[in-house]
Image 1 (cartoon, helix red, strand yellow):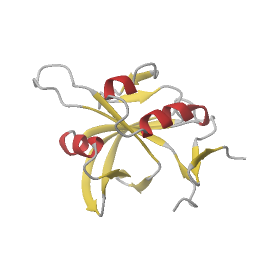
Image 2 (tube, one colour):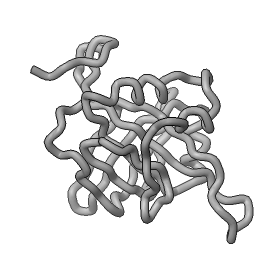
Image 3 (cartoon, rainbow, N blue to C red):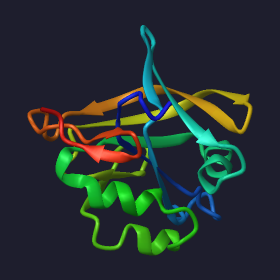
Length: 160
């Protein structure tokens, strides 16, 4: 599968608040290349999440999440969020310019090609991953002309 080139996205969510009237909890994020459009009507997307990972657990608990489609100049951000268990979630977002999604409250990464705010539509356990299908609630095109960040054969690549 390393021979299949893919775009790179950052999937983010905010822990639900402990107090229903209080602020949300910590932010979490995960770099993914297994992301795709599933349907236009209704607008559905799919991301594959490693079963039992922090993000899998969070997306089971928190139905609202976001996706930032990363641009070529965002390799460091992709690498940072691809490191499993090396940094606490609090440190992952430190110095990463972002804003909050209006609907989800999840971080949306500044400088991305596109952003999507989603609500979980369905979860499908498959082998060692869970396919999380999200209904797209809101989209944005912050930098639609930038080149995409691509991943091929274990490395980030430049599209020529």
